[in-house]
Image (tube, rainbow, N blue to C red; front, side):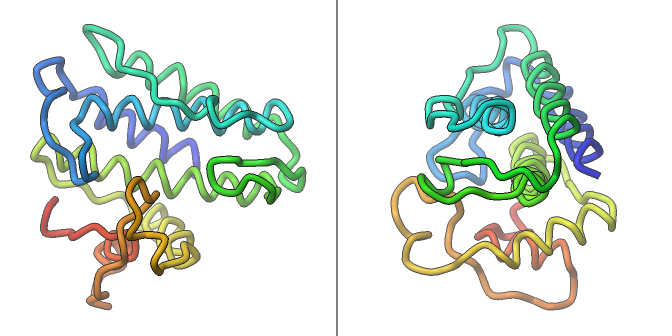
Length: 189
C-alpha cells in the first residue's frame, strides 16, 4: 500500500511543469517548488533514517526540484524510500529526529508516518494545480487511521508546525475528515 501511495503522488507530480512552481499551496508560506523540495527531502530523510542509525535532521532537508522536471527527483527519492522500507525488518526501531530527537519507532510505524505524509501532500500538490484529488478507499482508510494518531494542541499553532490545528470533523466522509484532522479544508481541493 505504501508503494501505491508513492505512485499516486508521483502521478500528480508528473503533471507539474516548471511554470507551475510558483503556484501557492495549502501549506502556509510554501509555493509548489518549496512543497516539492519538502516531499523529496522527506523521502530521502525517511530512507536514510531506516538505512542508517541516527540519521541527522539534515537528512530531511528540502531538495529543490530538478530543472525541467520535478518528477525525476521524486522518482529517485520514492524508489529510495520504498527500497529502504522493503529491506528493513518491520520491528526494527529507528530514530526519526524530525519527529522526536530521542524516541525510536518500529519501521512499521515509520511506514505509516510516511504514508500519511505522502498521501496528504499528494492532495496539497493536486490542489496547487487546481485539480481534485481523492485517493482510493484503502489509502483513505490507512491515512485516516494515521491522522487520528497525530496529536493536536498548542504545538500545531507554532510556526513551522508539521500540521496546522485540526478543523471540525464533518463525520460524513473519511477523506474530508482525514484532511480536517491535519488542518486542511477539503473545499480548498
